[in-house]
Each structure stands twice: as C-alpha cells, then as structure tokens.
Length: 536
Image (cartoon, rainbow, N blue to C red; front, side):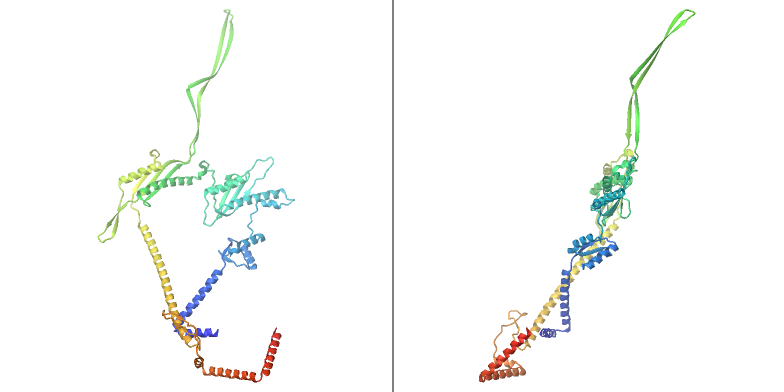
C-alpha cells in the first residue's frame, strides 16, 4: 500500500498545481457521481398507501409503520403517505385488519352479526343502515365519484294509516378537477328512488362537497320535461342556432372573422282550452211525447153537450255537438333576433420604404345580402313573428391578436435559442473534458516512464515504434551477474557477500561434522513440531 501511495505521489509531483487541482477535481467528481448513481439505483420506488387522511389517522399509520420499520414518505402536508411499492398491498391488508384505517362500508353484512334479543326498532335501524351502505357502495363505483354518503328517511308503516312518502339525501365527493353533469345527477337520483320503497325521484336531493345543490326543483318546470329549467332551455336553443350560423360563416369569411349572437324570446305559457261547438242545421229528433185529454160540457139552457179535446206534444231534439280540448305547446319561439358581424378583406401593398402594408376593405353590399339570406335560412326566419337579422361588416381589432402572436413568437425564439445554447455548452464541456483527459493521460504516461526509470530493477516501459503516444513493457531479458552487482548499492553488495560467506561456512561445517549437523537438524524439527502442537 505504501508503495502505491509513493508511486502516486511521485506521479502527481510531475504536474503543476493547476494540473493537480484539475486531476483531483475530476477524480472526486467521478467518485461522487458513481456513489450518487449507486444510491439512486438502490433507492426503493414509493407508491401511495393512503391519501386524504385526517391528522389522527395519519399519526396512527405512521406510528405503525415506524414499529414495523417500514420506510415511508409524507406528501400533501402529511395527508398522503407513501411506502415502497412491494409493501403497499401488505400494509393495506394489515391496517384494514387492525382497524387503524376504518373506511369499510357496511351493507347487508350488518345482518350477519344480528343478535337474538334485537328489538323491532334495532331491526329497522339496521335495515336503513344496510340500504344506505349498499347505495353508497354503488354510487362510489362511478368513475367521477371519489366517495359519497347516502342518508335515507323511511316512513313508519301504520296499520290503518295512509302510506307516507320518504326522502333521501346524497352527498358526493368528486375526484379532483372533475365536474358532474345534470344527466349523471338525475341518474343517481333515479338510482336511489328505484332502490328504496316509498321514495320518488323528486324527493331525492343531491349535493356536492361544497354544499352546492345539484338537483333542481322541477315543480315549476314540469312542462319542460327532461330539458331542465327555462334558462337552460333558452341557452340551449340560442347556442344551437349560433353554431349553425357559425358553421356557414366559417366557410365563407374564414376562421375568427365572424361574430354571431342570437337572442330568442321563448313562450313558456301552457294553454289548455275546452270548446263545445253546436251545429243548428243538423237537428235530430231524439224523442216525442204526446198527451191527449177529452172533456164533455153540458149546457143546461140549450140542453146541448160539448166535447173538448186537448193534445200536448213534447218533442226532444238533439243538436250536433263537437267538444275540443286544446293544450298549447310550451317553449315555442315568439321572436328571434340574430346579429352577425363579419370582418372585411385586406389588401397587401408595398410602401415606398419597402414595408408591407395591409389595407382594410369592407365587404360589398351584395356579399352582405348573400350572407343575410343564408343566415335567415339557417335560423328559420319568420317575418310574421317580427324576427330580425342584422349583418354588418366592420374592421376587427387585430392589435391584441398581433401583440399576442408576437409575444408567443418571441417566447418560442427564446426557448429555441436557450435549448441551442444549453446543448452547445454541454457539447463544449464534453470536448474540453475529452481534451483534458487526453492531455492528462499523455502526461501520466510520460510520468510513468520517468518514475519507472528510477526503480532499482525490472522491466521498463518503452515507447512504441509504430505509434508516438503509447508505451509498452518489453519482455524480460536475462542480465549478467556482474552487471546486476554493479547496479546495486554498496550496502546491498555487502549484505549479499556476507550472506554468501555465511552459507559457505555452514556448508563446510556440515561436510566436516555430518553427525553433529544431522543432530542439530533433528532438534530443530522436534522444536517445530512441539510448537505447532501447542498452537493447535
């Protein structure tokens, strides 16, 4: 290890202070980047465990996670808790079982835990809870609904009493950024009304989380049917007529060169009339009744008898009668007003200074008459109702549009040049780093050669003959003993000579006294065996 540090120190000493700073900075940056990449790769991926939790429930969940030594992250001011992806399902099951997060909605499961001594009141209460829970589960299945609450008011059934109507209330907590339409609200109200006995759709109230009433009272608009209230119906009619006119004008004058406004006066009165008509020329005898009476009078003076006969005739005639029952339509158009504003035409010309100038030219009266005729046909113009259609050609104010276009053009140019500059700086940085690394490698190669020349022995790197920037280590060659001794220092040569002299004396003693030498070797081996046994 010391040799390595000594070698690195000797290499760095070949460079100037600036080069040392660059080399150390690059090495530290490389090491830091490697460590950051390793930590990022080993970082666990988190997913949402629970969201929109209250403070108390979130505290319980975090306490349980700490006890289980599970990593977690907090978002949305502590309302959202994230855990590693591979532990989300396990933690949810664990918290659902322990009851820490109690968001389980009970439906008909309530009756699975019924007791024997339950009173009638408790049975009715459980029935209402079960119905509310089942309806809540169904409403929560809607994609736009995050969660909901359903409240039912069920009437009490009496033996000799009249059936009373119940009511229901539904509170919707929608998904963030979502809006619910009128048709969806009516479908929820119809779902609740058709799921519970004695509840009509008009008795179901639907509100959102902000307390806004989503269902409308349709008692005043019963004649409108499913269209809704009067203002919505009027807005629908005006929008449809406006779109019809705009579709025609866009093909004539171009996009954003026309403005259309439609005003409709609707008659929401409902007329109901019953009329009976009689035809005096068409008479039919239904029945006739005759009464005849005869009387005899005696004249005593003249001694004569007078007979008198009276006849009464009653004839019943039936006239031809027609009964008519008329109900007038509601929501008919009483008057229609359409205002159309079209932009003129522009002629481009070149000014003396070379600048392009656009000159406004109003549309001709013939073009305006043609546009007016098309608009009347599109909206169903009726002169007897007093309808009005007005078409004018006026120059539009395009200054704001031109300013906006110029602003967006400048923003796009800035973003484009910013991207080009960033990419250019990145490329320049890479090129500079490449040349610095190349220069450093060249300098390092030279320093290695110079450092290897100071080594006492061994092969030295030599420059390649074919290339000018690389180095290679030649194969080991045998050198003579005298040349090797000459390269050593005096102290090394003295040590080698002393070892050689000692070796010669030991060999001579073994030749002269072989028995003593053998005895000494056996003693050494015995001591070595005893030492190994004691260590084991």
